[in-house]
Image (cartoon, rainbow, N blue to C red; front, side):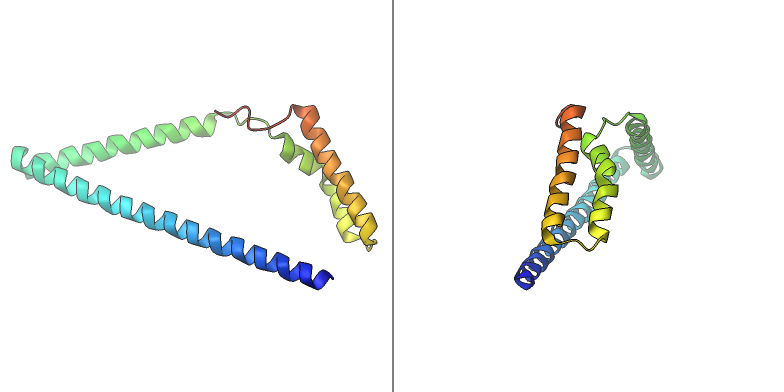
Length: 141
């Protein structure tokens, strides 16, 4: 009975892992292509500036623009880093229920006791989330 469930779970997990690898591989390829496109755009801009202002001035304009873009990205990173994160009631509830779950997983109990323990842990998580104010996505916009 449990062998079929185990193989089903392993096939589901391997399917999810394969899908995630494919998705992140495509994200990486898209990032690489956009980086190359940005390089070609900078080269074209440099060529236009060379024809208009000369080689040294064109290089200085490109370097200055990249420096300002870097400063802007650094400033945005500092702002995001210093912004306070909204509370995560589900995470705190999971941390509170973790010792009970560890005891249930570590002990040799019957499957009925394991199911009852799982219900208790799930109830603790949901109860803390309801008491803490519901969904944790409300604070993000």
